[in-house]
Image (tube, rainbow, N blue to C red):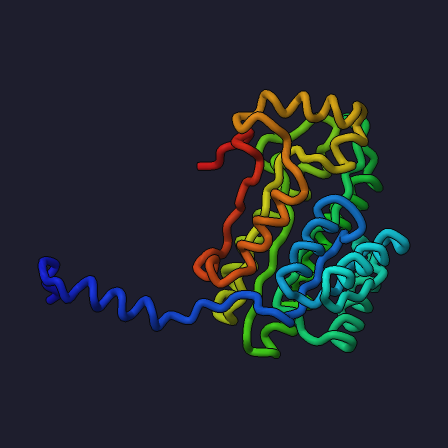
Length: 274
């Protein structure tokens, strides 16, 4: 029986803690980032490049995706662009195969790509619903599945980060398919984390708040008006892509080695999860 009053207990716990293997991304590891051309995707790609990762950056936008790859190379790492429509299973299969052939099995996969086709629920056409879920949810699943197989084969494990949204928590007018797809991301993340933990694969979801990216501006308004809206958020501002990139850098590090199956809200306190 353990003597709780013994000074040896803390020593034993400390000894055991130092023996735990806490793996995280190391310099030279391969990271895949989807939706790399703009916003969060570009900021995440650049942050991981500065952390020493070798990048496979994916996007449908060729010129801007190539520019992100160039910017990562300028930061001192290897980075290659892969054209991929995340709504196309064939594109995902081809890009995953090319990534592994040219760079190797990734340790990090960031499922950032997504679309928000705005429409009132009462008028929402079925084809718009299908397209949104194909890109945001099915595409993210197929990408995670393809690379999880490589991680298992590689026997080191890895880290997968899926992108959800605050709209998955509280809904949003004119974004029913987007909200539904992002709610699906949260459930998918928990299931992947449960099934793949035995293979040393950690899976988490980031839930970003309104940030200085193109998406919130597509609904109308200016960047100045967006920033003004941020004054009502507890921390007094909207998010910046670098806020999200910082969370990605943490989640892929050894410091996050005991975090899996979580939805982490990065929103200045706008939505406070239990």
